Image (tube, rainbow, N blue to C red):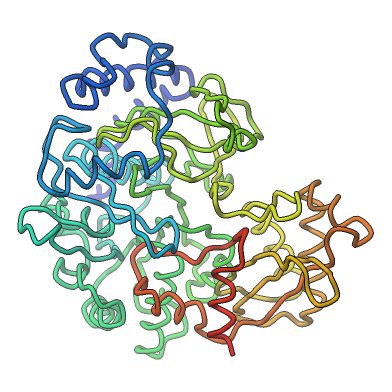
Length: 503
C-alpha cells in the first residue's frame, strides 16, 4: 500500500462521508454554521451593536443586519489594522488579505482570523485533495511534492506581528510545518515579492524535484510553466515531472487557458480541478471532472446568502438563504464568516446548476459586466463565446478585456474586444463573427440589442501585442499572486489604458 492510498483510507475517506451529508442536510448544516458564528461574536463590538444575544433564528439575523460592502466594513478594518481587537470577531486579527478581485488602484484589506484559516481556507484545501483522491484511488499524489504558486506579504503598518498581503502568501506563511515537507518551493522563494525573480528562483529550485501536483492561478502558472520549458528545452511539462497528475486551479476562469495547457502538458492522465478560494473564504471545489460546476462547501465557517442579480442596485433587494435559491439564475454572493465579515457582498456572481447537493458556477462580477445599452453581458457569456470562436478558428487566447464604444465618429455603438492570442485564429473576421453570433445565442438581451444593427453594431476585435496585459499589470504593480485582468468593463477606463500601451 503506497503512502497516498494509506492517507486516503485513514485520513481523507472519513471526511468524504461527512461531505455526503451535503446532499440532504444542507439547510441544517448552514443554520448550524450561522448559529455558531453569531454565538461566538455576540460579545464583540459588532455583536453588541446588533444585539447578537437576541438573535436565535435566520429571520432574526436577516431582519437585524444590513448588507455590507467594503465601504461599510473599511472603518472597522482600519481600526483592526491599527491594533484594536474584538471589533468584528472575538479572536485576535493579525493577518489581512489584500484583495485583488479588481484592478482598481484602491486595495481592500480583508481580515483573516485563525479560525478562518483553519475552518475555511485550509479545510478547503484538504477537502479538494480528499475529493480528488476519492475519485482517483490509484493516485500517487503524495509520492512527490506539490508546487504551490503564491504571492507575497509585508508587515502590516510596520508591525512585526501583523501581516498584509496576498491570501496565498498568508496561507503559506501559516501552514502547518509538516506540510512544508510535501510542497515546493521553499517558503523563502514562495514569498519573494518580485514576480520575475520569483519565477527564475522557482524554476531553478523545482526542476530537479518530483512534482506530482500544482496549485495556483492558471494565468500565472502558465507563465511559470513556459519559463521552465524554455529553460530546460523540453516540449511538455511531463518530460520534466513524469509523475505530474493534477492541477488545482482558481482565481480566474480556466476556459481561455484550457487549450494552452494541453499544449504544455500533453499527458492524457492529467487532471484539472477548479477551486474557489477567494480572499474572503473558500467556497467551492469541483467534484466531478466531467462537470465544470463546483460543490458549495457548506459546513465551513461561512454562512451564505444570495441577492438576485437584477436586485443588486435596489434599495431593498430580495435576499435568500441557501434553501430559497433557484437553479439557472444569477445571484450576487453574500457571506458571513469566521473572520468577522457579516452579510458581506464580495462582488462575485454565481448560478446554481443543481441542488442536493448544491453545485454552482461563477458567472462573473457584480461590477465586471457590460450593460451600456441594456445587453447585460456577463463573463460567463464571454467565456462561452470565446471558447466557440477559438474552437472554430484554431485560436488560443492568452488574455482579453472588453468594453463598450458608446458612440464613434459615425454615431455607431459597439463592443470592443482587446485580445492577446497565444495562437492567432485562421481568420480574425471569422473569429469576431462567431464570437458575436454565440453571444446572441447565449444572451437574449444582447441578441435584441444587435437586432438589425440598430442599438449595437457587430463587435470589434483588436489584436493585442504580445505581453500587453502583463505589461499593463506590471505598470500597476500587480504582477503575480491573484491579480487579474478585468474581463468586462462598463466603462472605457481600463481598455483606454491598455490601448495606449498597445501602440
